[in-house]
Image (cartoon, rainbow, N blue to C red; front, side, top):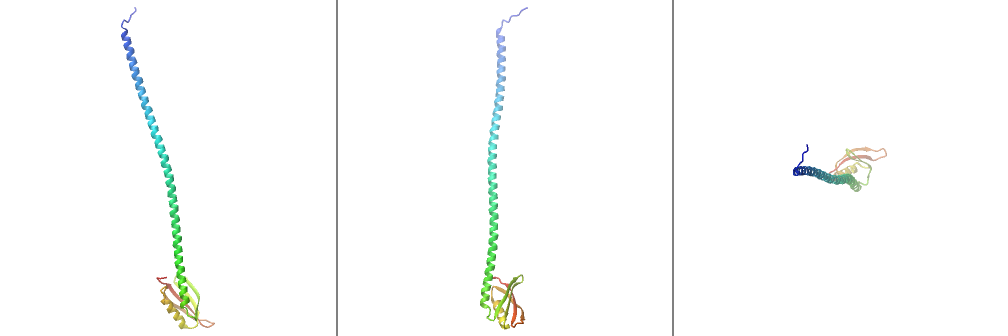
Length: 178
């Protein structure tokens, strides 16, 4: 037996419900896809931004490392130049000390005496010389003792030479002014 549906509104209503739920499903699907796309683009934007920041920081790090290396090189050069300058000043002071001593020796050395040796060692300064009379040697020793450049000046040895005359050795230390 045949049945006739005399109520087409039920079929229409079923189709409308089916269409409504299909549209809801598609809308939800599109909404989820849009959220995934937005999240993807947001994460991609953040990653790109962070990568560019990383490149900038890496470049800054490289520049700063170069500057640090240059600064360390300049500091090493400065230390080397300072050490060279200190050596130069020390040598200059010693040379001036020797110059002053030699100038004063030339003035206070009696005419009958002459120096044959000048040596500096850990004990002090040793002056060797020759002369005619013992009194002139003692006079020379007293003059040296009066110099502020030297201290502790003493006559160490006086010997008779075969050729005649006396050979002497004086020993002194540098004074505070020297």
